[in-house]
Image (cartoon, rainbow, N blue to C red; front, top):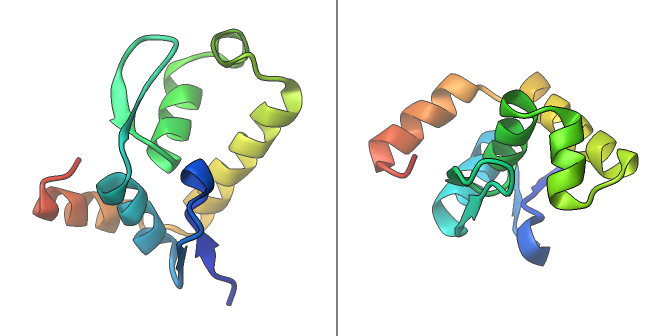
Amino acid sequence: MSLWKCGIDGCAERFEDVESAIIHQTVDHDRHECTVCGSIVPDGYFAIRHAFEEHSRAEYVRAYDADSTAVRVREDIKAAIEDEADLRAIVEELKRRDAL
């Protein structure tokens, strides 16, 4: 089993499961302001999810001065997490902690 790395701002924290990594990102890191719409979202997975579910790829590229490689990397991260994570359990845990 591979460990999940946080990766926010060079954070090297590692976790045995993806759910713990996402909870760490949400609880232990500052929130992120979406450059496209100004929404405040947890950094990491939830920021990526927001960007690609609420905005077009073109909006993301313009707002973040990103290129197609940056888009693909984030889409791959989102897909990998969603393939493995129990998102319902994450949301329930964050509600329990009142961090979402």
